[in-house]
Length: 370
Image (cartoon, rainbow, N blue to C red; front, side, top):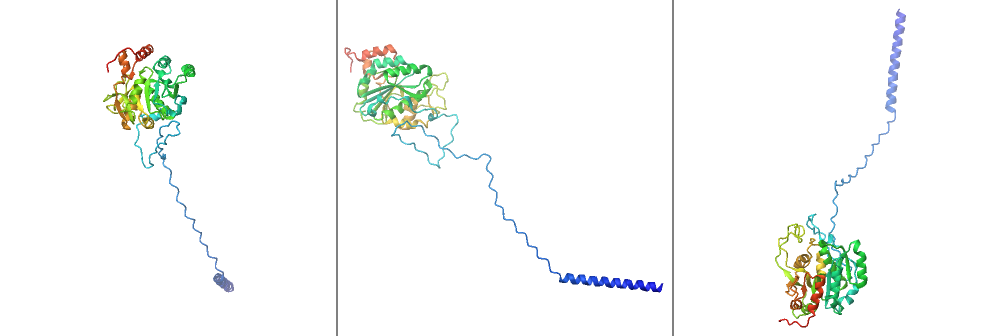
């Protein structure tokens, strides 16, 4: 037992010594081992660019300037003045219709030959507004007072709107025979009389700009052309500018009842009293007014009463004088030779009455008091 115990003790001592020796070797190896390379720091990611701002839900469109009224194809027409970019027009009631929204420029049948030399040799241009179906009324004018268009100093033409398809063959045949139908592009109707009058102004400005005087009249009128020439060349008027002569109505009130033939909506004319205007059956315009009336029309509210619009609203805005002249009867009168010879314009004349008034105008027997 003693020997065995001694041997076991020796084995434990050797094991302990070997363990201590191994620990010492591990310590020496750890101390002399090369250090691991230092870890390189990961480079920081580049800074992200800020994202672009999100577009608004409803991007605002750049304001578009209002379209100017279309000018007639005249080489001398002035370019319309565009408002400054910083000027913002007031908002417009969407129910309001401007004249430029409706008017169609140009002519299907222009007939520039009706005004030779752009009117340089004329004393008077007479343009008669007529409906496409009024062929007999036009014939009566041609056979009576329209004869004065044979003079070299007087020109005459009939102004129509675009006719319906059913009447186009008849219009073409009539125009082929007489060559005096000026046909615009706006549809011919009573509510479009303003458009027809603008077509008349456009034609005069385009093809007859040098005529000193324009008479606008209707196909149911009798016109005393010699008296009109005498009136236009009187010393008090021969050099007048920016003037309209006719039967001037003052302080007329708009008709607001829809049953009236002359009904005017507040959207077409919001005022309570019309400006002074010359009644539409016949009025005389100085030549310098034609261009400025045409240029000013597009930006105004459309008004179906052409005489109120042209000689009232536009003329008042442009400071054109409206001069009352009693020679413009613009109504039906007693068919007496003296009344016919003293007056300039008689209204509501039917086909057969044109010939009766023509005979009385040429009557040389009746003595009229001065």
